Image (cartoon, rainbow, N blue to C red; front, side):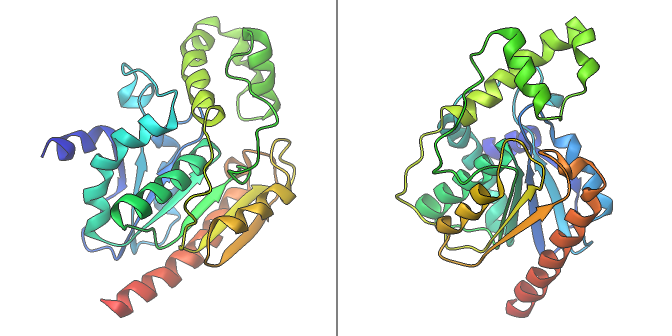
Length: 260
């Protein structure tokens, strides 16, 4: 019951459909919020129930300290999300930091609870076994923001608003620490199908690095490149992305419905 009560903090319900055949969980990128996934509610197939994970330090959880360690994040998330995963078939979609979180969550669920997503969608992140080329969460203030702006996900004029920068900096540093202190272990290979997305002009994730995700599942793995940079999913490519996700969702719904 306690974990059920906590779920209203961790889970943002974007579309509740009790009779949906499938439940999709979205995991946001560094500095992001669950609210960024609201636009998907109108674009994804109505047969899927849609919700997003809200991490501490932002949105309705602004007053909570942000995580700086992925293992502790998952230790707290798993007891909350596990009952929802046992109710009906589910899939995960994560972009950038969210890709890493959803991937490692899938491995923990597989190993500890014999639960698996019907499909894992990861986007905008190198294969997890590749050593990071740069670590920015401890950089001096100006260098840290220079690197963030290179990713093109933060409006450049934000630096003209010192109070906003002061607000966002600790959250962003914490999120990057989650990713940059992650220690990969090759002990568990997933057995669910995967789809890996990336931007053709992403300066931080090369197409060849996306291809290396194939080694992280024993099942099928599709690589799909979209026009745009690291944040391609917020430009016109968003419609191409949701169309492609929908195709997989519809096939999964048919599959789980036929087994019911």
